[in-house]
Length: 438
Image 1 (tube, rainbow, N blue to C red):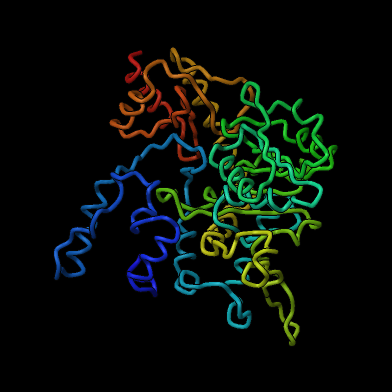
Image 2: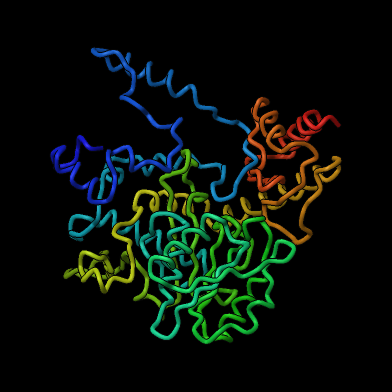
């Protein structure tokens, strides 16, 4: 990266010293040493294009790509129709940037407008922005939207995704916003903790389904937040909305989530897409930008950037958000996916996920030691016990080409998507029976 920065090595060194670092690699101390590239890629000089491709394919072949994925926890292995990449790979979309000049950006602006429209329909909200970086930052930005002079305190469900919780906590720490975790009981929110919220409560954040895949009593949580004069924010798995009540129907003020399940490959962790939608009265608090539909001088339909709450447009000390761009290509990918699937397709995918996960849970429950941890209903993720060392079990399953559930303490968080039919599930059950010695 340093080779492309418009600064000399001396200038770079001065910047590093200013933040208390010695060299560029110190910026990556949180990355495990074993995955850092120590030198440049070891490729012989003078190779042809074909030769370079062959060498890179050899390197890529060292990655383990599982054909059977039974893990979710924020990134989901859904089927992506071929039309999605066919449309989004078009050069005019693939190479576009921020559509500041509306007169030459109508295609991109329309794609953003259509994305916003479908997100509103999916979440039951009035307005959506043009996306943010990922689901965790969308949750944190939503929490910041609710801040007022008299209301700052943030309550976050302890049953939400741990990484979302930490992202919200980091935003709150940076702005000195009071942060509280809502306790849980049997994998679900303890709603009694919301019955007497203090008067300075700004919002309550709930995830539906929660990190354990369970359905929360989300409507009651929203009602309790509103009774205290606070806003209700829901983080939601978008595929579940094919068959579940939307945040809007449940009375929430803001809906956010990770858009990766909407036609975006898992891609080893990104880039992903954070979607945000809200009720009309909170429109001006939304970070980022909003594309709108209007008419030109000839009365023809046209698209413009209606709102741009970007930080380079206002004084930084007055900024309410750290968002400076959007995930336009990922947002368009989600829009193409939703358009291709339609309401019926989205409902069918959600139903397949639900039914497949429940069938798998039932079959697992017939094996000794794999019973469910919780009793509440769930969507397509659920937590089970493991009768053997969980790390050993994971390794043995991996050797057989199966990425099993995510290890949570000494338990397993399983996930089933529409890519796992009955036959595939039965085959996995047979492997689990063998690995566990049953």
